[in-house]
Amino acid sequence: MKPLLRKALLSIALLAGQAAYASDIAGVHFDEQASLANSELQLNGGGLRTRFMLKVYAIGLYSPKKADSLEALLAQPGPRRIQIVTLRELTAEQFADGLVEGLRKNHTDAEYARLQPRIDEFRTALLGLRTAAPNTLIRLEWLPGSGTRLLVGNQQRGRDIPGEDFQRGLLRIWLGDKPVDSDLRSSLLGRN
Image (tube, rainbow, N blue to C red; front, side, top):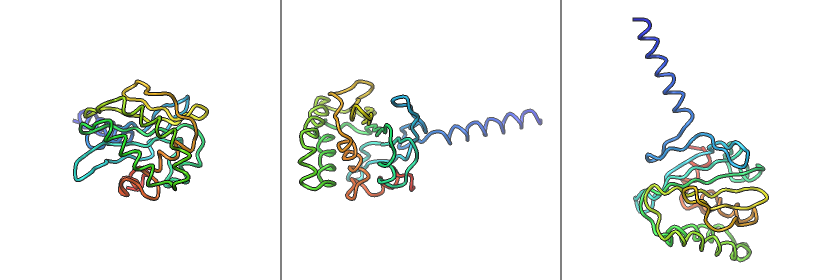
């Protein structure tokens, strides 16, 4: 009886250990750690984007160290990743327009004007998708010295967009003063 009990307890401990190293959001799995540009990143937080009570996408934010504010996150050197998995079919235009609207809301007119050529380039790369079926993996990766890289699946779309100001602008969509969803901001910053 003791060996059977020991095996059962070991199995439970292993399952509990696995749960501590991963997060599931609306059925989407996010690893607790990811590698990017020879760096190990931590899942800072993750959440669910809804709109009009519909599940739109699951999102995870990866950073070198966990941070509970946008300022603390931006103070960290090194790569970062925003990982999105669509939960319903979206046109590329719907997705791109949502991101551009988030950029506009979180920047002054002058800041937005400085970013405009890169926003247009980013939007054009997104529009090349036409549609994003459910379970489409979209990654926005900040690679210091190179720029922000858009990947759909594992395929890069467009060129790396230069400037840390652009990447910081993207983060403000979800973490800025006027985020797309304040509950989602709290989740991405690990506050929930």
